[in-house]
Image (cartoon, rainbow, N blue to C red; front, side):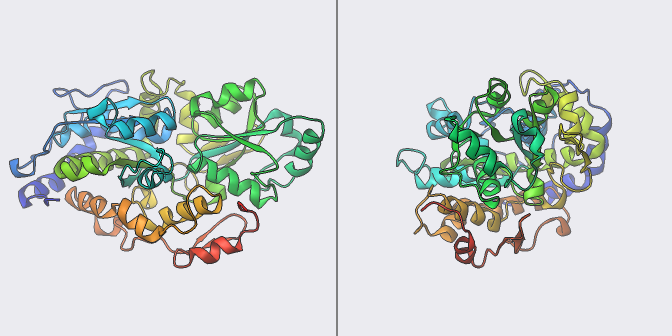
Length: 440
């Protein structure tokens, strides 16, 4: 990619304080940015660095971790960098997101998306696209933390939390009575599937035989619990909070308890689009990074909740979104936690936006564990192919992100899970071999 010119970089860095003041203090909570009415000032883009196109179509699912894309659109960050015709289009499910990425905008689909981190890898391999390899790039992580594993009220007296083992006997009794037990996730091999599998397996419950894992689109989770279609589910906010608010289930754990500051959604785009439009890609990345910084500020949480709550985005009351945005967790069991300084959904703080290659390697290792991708997959080579953290760094430097906010390594190092298990990205095979429950 072409680097920012010195003139553009100096302008961008020099106006950061003014732009920040304008962003934080002057925007209406219901404002929609337009080409002529953006709430942040346009960058002084040198013609040589102007995007090749002004349009791109990005998909999102109705989840609060789509906030960076929604804010980039609403606040005018895309406009700021010359991407004046970006469309952020709601998708009905992750399967629809996949199908529309396969089509691309030229075929009536989309160019990129708010997406489950493993999906771009499985699309690049062709394992979820009927053998059709669709090369994808991961450009940024959109958030860390912020998902929930919930149980129906049937199991409320068990007081199940991080330890899922009390469910072993309860599930066995229900099965012996002839009842089919179901646990819902949002996409096979996706992040929610892997959180659910890890949690169950850590408590001695085999997700392949002790319960049936089913796929339910995120916005349909609450209704499926209401009608008794499943025992437990894993999904992003606001649906765990909605389950508690509506009194039909409770939060067993927020996934940050399972793995502190774990990676979650990603911004991914078709590789052919990125390769054809490197300057437009950089502009999109800069816009999303600035939106993530805005989302990270505590004083913006209420406005952010009001914006994403709107019908065209999530269509959920803002009051049901704000609490967990701020890190206030009512589990629905009498337990209330303040995670404002620890396990809340993070968009920029603690390197939440940077796509660590070591994290993607964990996702691929877990996908091997459960048989979603072949065991002989060269995972390191695949990560190097799909993960474009180099483009993230370039965009971050261009908007003047301080050097101490840009990770020096593509690895976050050894990761430790709630049960004491460790993942060393230097030796994923040892991690895989240490796990007792896995696909035969």
